[in-house]
Amino acid sequence: MPADTAVLAPTRLPVRVPLVTKPMSLLQSVAAARRNLLSILPDIATKQPMVSGRTGVRWHMLMDPKAIRDVLLERLDDYPKSNVTKNLLEPAIGDSMFIAEGAHWRWQRRAAAPVFTHRNVTNLGPVMTAAAETASARVAAVAGHRAIDMAAEMVAATFDVISAVTFADGAGFDRAAVHRAIDGYIAEAGRVSILDVLGLPNWIPRPGRLLSAGGLRAMKQMADASIEARRGGTGPDVPDLLDLLLAGEDPETKRRMSTAELRDNLLTFIVAGHETTALTLGWALYLCAFDPDQQALARDEARAVLGDRAATAADLPALPRIRAIVDEALRLYPPAGIISRTAQKPDTLGGREIRAGDTVMIPIYALHRNALLWDDPDAFRPERFLGAKPERYAYLPFGDGPRICIGASFALQEAVIILATLLARFRFAPVPGRDPAPVMILTLRADGGVWLTAEAV
Ligand code: HEM
Image 1 (tube, rainbow, N blue to C red):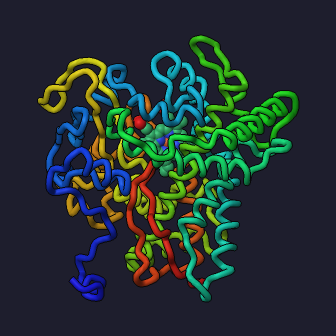
Image 2: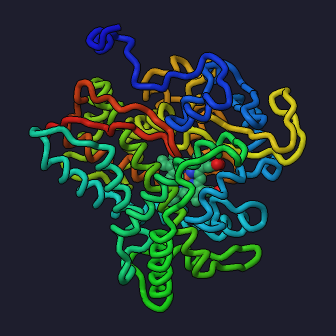
Image 3: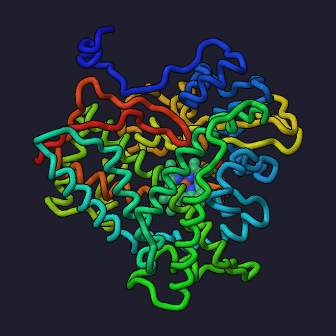
């Protein structure tokens, strides 16, 4: 179909990944995965509840909510995160909550739980409102003149937020250096991980084995210095994540985190929380530009609530449509597009035999577009989130079970505040011929950027 016909067609769909319709050999999947991890997903994963295969190792993809519940909730200890995921992240974030298992994970999760209560997350709202104002000023500077890459803008905005609430006032804490070290690490780690998620044998040559150790070391030293400084001094008026984690204690064992444990967990919050939230916002803005009618409805809501001011945490209940756009962006482009586990024992999932050592993947991208679970799965329809909630374990942008994302409400609050503020002030339109391509490296990125024009309203 010629591009202009596609633009006019009423059933036009937002960008998506062409999924595999023929089985691939090991080398073909390695080559495909290196370009885009999502391109190893078979098309049938959007039509069936389970797909199994063997590409070097035995693997299974689960799209059946019941089987997913078994893995993420009922038999959590039999399905730890895959070792390769751990090896990959360990150099940056140590044995922190994101990768630890069993008792070592449990006590850290319990000690950190109070950090993310509704009250504490709401108290951090002003930092998010300030980031929305800064992003809005940057968009205003180019509005009406030239296009702007909103994906890059959103990375800047979410880094402002997470660095302000982790190491806000740390003496000598060089935010720009930390940002460079983390982004460099994510880029390196991403190149390694595409093979690791498949669980391929170690003999397959991998690019980028040498991680940027120097940058990481400097970053850890800076983080340790700010933690030590905070221990001896006072923090900001409103307790930030560092204060809250410093005060954290496991209610069962009374254990508290050492400086190294605090540092690894705070760096985990930065690594796990900043790019993922930026991607959510970038994709939400792409979708709004893609569908001007939806954008107009969202703008009406935002303007009615906000007028010209920036959104705050207190506005969230009055912005259900903005929230539905965020939810729908997370369905169509889940930043964590695939999560994976390694089976520890023989089991049966969805009626199939699982052997110890098998790789069990939950391809969230395919789950969210599975025709057995969603009407018109590839269409952008935020209304689906305005009424009844989707089926549990069919919608998993944050995972589920005891290891569900600890920062979900933080991320959602931030995304709604920033999106509502921008939509109330600007009308966004796509730049013809510059649609982003969904490419999953470590996360589901908008390859080519989200180039939009903005016009002040
Ligand atoms: C839209 C943004 C985000 C998305 C899509 C997201 C997604 C996820 C997913 C899917 C998991 C589970 C991984 C698995 O089970 O294998 C997870 C875990 C986690 N996330 Fe997030 N996340 C986001 C934002 C954040 C933020 C803002 C923070 C911290 C401030 C954060 C911290 C964590 C941590 C610490 C874990 C590990 C929890 C545990 O294992 O107990 N995330 N996230």
